[in-house]
Every structure is written in C-alpha cells, then in structure tokens.
Image (cartoon, rainbow, N blue to C red):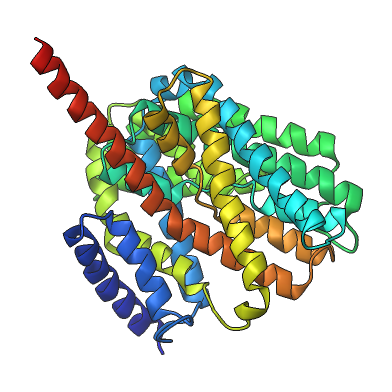
Length: 397
C-alpha cells in the first residue's frame, strides 16, 4: 500500500472513530486509539507500522505537546512544582518496586532483569492525557499543572535511573557511553538553555518574523521554534516532546499566544496528531501473547495501579481531595516513548530477551489505551461532586 493510501485510510477512519467516541460521550482520542488497534495487525490488517507512519506520528506527538505548552500557564506550573515532584517520585517508586518484586518472587527473574522491567513501567508519557484534559477543559487546572510538571520530573528520573542501571548491570551496548555525572550535567543544562531561550530569544525571534513580508511568517516561526527546541532537547539527552512543550510554554508568555494557537491547532489536528494516535494501536499484536498472558496481565495491572496509587497519594500529601488526587494519578498512567527507550536499552544490554521485550511493548501500548478511559471516569466523578456540592450549598442558603 502506498504512503498516500495509508494517510487517506488513517485520516478517514480516525475522524469516524472520533465521531463515534463523541456520540458515546467519550474523549475522541479513545476512538482514534482503538482505530489503530482495529485497523492494525491485531485485527483487520489494513495498516501496519511503517517508516512513513513512524515519522508522521513523531511530528504528531511533538505538535500535540507544543500545543499543550502554547495553551499552558507558566505561573500555574511554577505554583505546583512541589506536588508535581512528589507525584513524579511516588509514581516512579510504586510501579518500579512492585513490578520488580513481581518478576523476582513470582516469575523467578534475575533481579537485574526485574529492575529493568520495573523501569519500563516507571516512565510516564502524558501526550494522551493532555488530549483528554484539553477536551474536558482541565488542561489549565490545578490537576493539569501537577500532571504536566510531574511528567517532566518523571522523565528526568527515568533517564537518570536508566543511566545508573546500564552502568552497573549492562553489557554489550552503546546505549549509554556517558558517565552519570555527565548525564546529570546535560539534564541540568537542558533546563538552563530552555529557560534562557524562552525568556530572551523566543520573543525577539517572533518579533523579527512578524515584520517579514512573506506569508504566514509567525506560524512558520512558531514551527521553527517547536522543532528546534525538540531537536535541542534530543541533543541534550531529553525527550523531543519536552523540548516542544517548553517551546510552546515560552510562546504562551508572549503576545503571540492566541493568534498562534488558532494557526497551529488546525495543522496538528488535521493531519499529524491523528497519525500519532493510530500508530500507538498499530503496535498491538496478539500473536504469541498466549504464552505470556499471565505475565503481561500482571504487569498491566501493576502499571495502572502503580501510577494511579503513587500519583494520587503524592497529590493527597499536598491537600488535594481524593477526586482531584485520582485525576492526577490517572493522568500519569499512560506510557510512551520513554518506556520504549528503556525496553530497547534492556534488550540491547541482554537483560531481557525478545519475547519479554515484545511483552513490554504490549504492556506499554495497552496501558496507554486504557489511560484515557480511567482519566475520563475520574474527571466525570469530580465534575459530579462539584455539581452536587453547588446544589447542596444552594439548598442551605
């Protein structure tokens, strides 16, 4: 099948899937994720993961997180940095420790392998959660700020723990040639560079482009910043989506915010972002899963509960009520690119074999598909509690 036909099928099916989701009062992202499962190798074999889909999906997730930053509130993020850090820490400890214990005491893995499997479950990717929060008007809420802040801290913790584990246990891999101190320095440098560019370079860059006579100057400037920050983040050892998010956040502090949000969203949601959602489902395959079904099911349960409980408890420590804390926990469930990186490193260092590598990919994809369902449930519960509380106050008055 040609790449053009692949794109036609993806765009057609994702819009139909999103429509059905909305009719069922579900976030549209759920329909788009399930289209990937149904159209992919798991069910109808209409589509398979290809290089074209991979590249388009990478553009999609970068633009999605750029839009999240563009619509973000830097002051809100700074206000909740402490609960975000606590949520990230507990959200790493709970699933990692639980998965490692399960692998050692139930499935008799070597403890080095068990630790790496635990690390795969420690990494959060909030790209899917961002879409749900955006659709349900919670992106710029207290819970949304904590989730986004925790995702940044979570990513850094995972990278650091990965470097330590590869240095101590790995063999036969070029995955990590940096020493741990150098890795820590590059992570710190990432934040310094992002802050400096965001504060002093981004506003001047946009002002310069706004004075040019070519068409769509400011939109092009925004995309240059989006992809430039993403590339810089990768060069400094961080996820490209974090770079894109910080680029959007920097623009959100300028006078160009509203205008650029109206320009960038159609570009992302018309083409690139649907391909990203479908690509997640395309990675699901049920072939050979019956041999590891108990193992995979156990890890999925731990992956979901570990993040849910760890995130919710972290939020509760800062006096959020249980409904808000559960939203935070659910927002941390989704896994993504960092989990795949850890799994690849574990495979290349011979700490897991191909069968268990496949199992980890399945766990990563399934938890990502489950996450928006759980997040929607907790957001609806919170909304219902607020409505009931307002009605109760009216009665009392």
